[in-house]
Amino acid sequence: MSSPELVMNNDGAPGFRPIDIVTIIYALLQAVLVTIFMSNRPGWFYLTGFYLAACGIALVFALFQKYGFTKILRLCYPLFFLPLLYEALRSQILIIWGRSFDHQVTALEMKIFGFEPSFILQKYMTIGLNELFSLFYMYYYILPVLALILVIRRRWDSLERTALAVSVSFYICYEIFIFYPVFGPRFYLENVYYLPLIGPFFTPLATRIVSQGGLQGGAMPSSHCAVALVFTWFLAREFKSAAKPLYFFLIMLSISTVYGRYHYIADVVVGLLVGAISILLTSWWQDRFLTAKENAVSARDIKNSETVGIGV
Image (cartoon, rainbow, N blue to C red; front, top):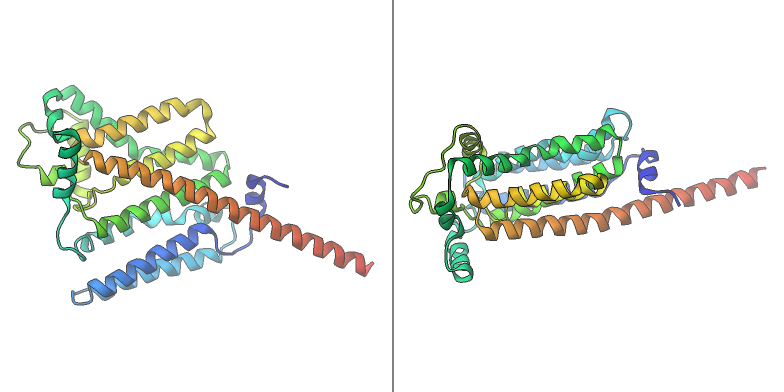
């Protein structure tokens, strides 16, 4: 039996893969939600069309053969339009409930800890720590660059597994944003904090990135932590000698989301759970898919051999 890596490299035939199926399911679900909850709002038809177009893109890529540069696109294409899916959520966050559930999250944390963690952290804030944790927070944006090593080393199986798990993590987070919107402490507790987050470089940079690109209502779960766990898991599996540094940076990134007031601790915990579930689910799914493909190839080869034998 050939290894998954070998199957991936030799299997250039078009057809639906797990990443296509999950992308189509997500896009169709979003189109249904928009049609049900936003049909009385201007522009809802265009948003529905956008999600149907995403389905169309997945269908087109399912017809692609994975040769040359198209192999990278074939295995990872959802990652390239995830930012568009994220932006589309801005008009959807409050379509079901019309309000956030920050009060429930803060009440839970007060019950567990007896205080609001990001508020208490003000006691220990310094400009140096602000800069340090802001740098750790922005480490998230470096992870996709690190994953390019998989492309350079032509580790197609690991690349597809990473792209699939990342996509599933984002899709799960995006759906939770709609069904359980949470603004996060930087919005909900804005008037409670008595110390501003200040610093000479990394602090204002991180704040600017979140202010311009952040999604109000998209705090629960922390997609930062979910996706960072996925990248860390697959990179650590591929490069075992770097596992300890990778997991250290994951821990510091998770702490930085609370320190920087971007997330509650509950957001972080649920985000890490989403990442872990995505890894387990997609690994099982991908293994089954590759096994089925390999069995199909073996059956076809046996049939061809028998046909040739009969002909002789």
